[in-house]
Amino acid sequence: MPGIIERFRPYLDLPLGVDPITLSEGNTPLISMPRLASDLGAAELHIKFEGSNPTGSFKDRGMTTAITEAVSRGASAVICASTGNTAASAAAYAARAGLRCVVLLPHGGVASGKLAAAYTHGAEVVEVEGSFDQALGLARRLSERAPIGLVNSLNPYRLEGQKTAAFEITEALGGAPDWLALPVGNAGNISAYWMGYRQLADLEGGDLPHFLGVQARGSAPLVEGHVIEHPETVASAIRIGNPARGEQALTAAEESGGRIIAVPDRAILEAQRDLAHEGLWVEPASAAGLAGLRSEVEAGRLNLSGQRVVCVCTGHGLKDPQVPAEPTTLIPPNLQALEDLLKL
Ligand code: F0G
Image (cartoon, rainbow, N blue to C red; front, side):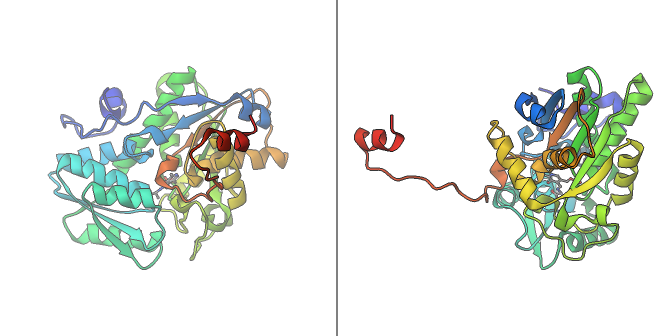
């Protein structure tokens, strides 16, 4: 299966004539959720399940383009700051390309599966005693002084790749959805989606979706209108107090006729559980989109009647398995005990 560069090459602003560094990312499923749609009062709800990318998150779309471009420039090393998924993806694509990869992580703030992935792919993992925002500041400054390419979403090639999810959704639905809900952390992804939809509308006409960007309440700088020094949320992927592409994200939301809102952790965890009960295990941050839709509908600020809605679930639950464990039951290995337990 070709990756997103090969599939969407004419639509991507990438140096010509380079061989893609790819892991066959993209082409992720768009899964219909009729029960959750009816709870929202929407005509249709589809989940764009980005957890089925090779490293378990949407970051792979942007990493294939960023690493391909870095290789085309002759780079031999890349660096990123990360709440985890960017690190895992950078590590994998750098390994594929034979590049040295350094990842800077906020100490203690990264889910176990993401950390394990970065190590396993051979990245040099550095924990910073501070926040993601401080780690990004360091990565950025180092990349300006030393021959090491920054592959955070400040790198424009990241957005070039990530916008392809918008193309896939339009392809699958035969048009843009009415609303698109997604989590917002460093704000690259919402900016990339808007680039993708705008590009399609310019080329082929058609409607643009309204965006609902969702932050966690304890980490909601774009809602509060100022930097959050000590962001807090259970959704560690979006525990970010000073989004690098904040202005662009606010513009995207506004131009789309939508908005960026904040939801409490409780709502995020409920949405995560409800998605899991529909068969889809996503990481907490990924459930923010659904949590945001619900909170707007419940508050009477959003009427989805007759609307086609897409919710982007950005990462797989397997990478962040720190959900409160349901109690299990231990039985002796005999049938009677099992029948007694199950009351069958
Ligand atoms: N969902 C997941 C699972 C993420 O990992 C991220 C960001 C987002 C949503 C938000 O996307 O930053 O483009 O607004 N993760 C970054 C990382 C920050 O380092 O992995 P965004």
